[in-house]
Image (cartoon, rainbow, N blue to C red; front, side, top):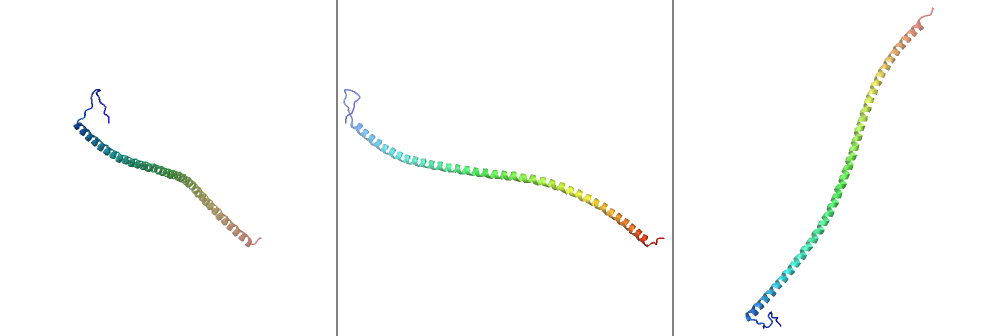
Length: 151
């Protein structure tokens, strides 16, 4: 192995201490490199695990979003149905009120008609009584006239 010298006309000189110190430093650096390589492998595995967990969480999140959208659609459907039923109920309520008003009008007219008919019946009964009375008078006169000898 050839060593470059920083100075042109000088020979490299290595002392035994320097060589042993450098040798120890190389061993230390190799050990540290192995430790760092091992740490790198562990961190790479941990990173892959975290990445997989992140992917799983993203998939779960996407599924929850789809489920949430489905539930929102169902709620909207139910609300539309409730609104439709509410509108229909309101329409039926208005119809019922209109029919109740008409019923009251018909009942009032019926009551008036019954009263008019009762009054007419009283008048007719009075007329009938009057006619009966006159008829009796005529029958009595007629009988009287039939039994009285004619001269």
